[in-house]
Length: 317
Image (cartoon, rainbow, N blue to C red; front, side, top):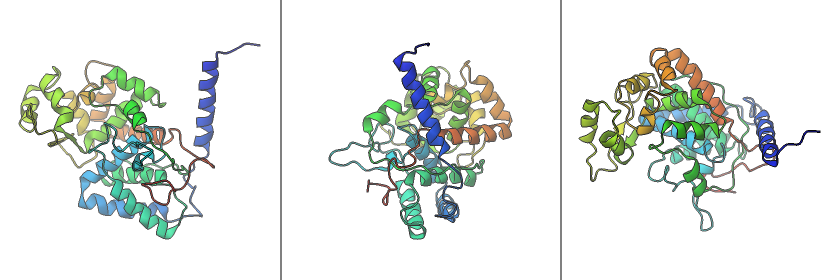
């Protein structure tokens, strides 16, 4: 009988466990226990996005930052405790990640209709989907049945969240570790068609990188001096900052990406072909983005008896 290295067996076991967990997710998970769930979430998000379109972008980002750290388990929502340094104060989240109060509002409405039934993790997944749709992007069927983590880890967030300084090879590696390929990476990055970034995040790119349109660099330097202004905000997609469309990819082709990591997608590398495709084919982008969001939502969910259904999304029961 052939023998296999212990590392191979460990990876195989983890893959089987992940597949089993995904198999327990279903779009009809709450069909009988909370039949109005999706309409409740949609109603809250419609009001939120109408009042502040940028919050839609924040909810998409919240979902990504949750799923990329130990899976889609709402760990990103947990407040720190005296014995736990959670994800909220990780480098990629502190004074940057938004939407916690929106999740609270959704949770309050859902709890009134279906007490102790729906996980915070599923609420974040639904809110992200609805945000994309409300901003003019695609929709998709959200798989449901995730449960909530009881703990969060600042160290895990720092280790897993890709910074704006990442090059393409690093991004490809980090996404591959989550089961996401180059097409997923390129499509998911298209979420930067909405939202903003701080000067501290794009300063190195506009001042130091060679692959930046000179006029664009001058324009952004006015908002982001070499010293000070770290919190000044600029739209990731200045063409249509509140519209989920393909202008982000056209910006990349014009060397007008705001972040170093974004411009890496169009820099004579393996993602160039996909950027060209999405820039001229909104249908292809919509399909690939929706498919990638489903894959993102399938990363290491807690199911069955694992985790819990939090009553308050900010703290374990």
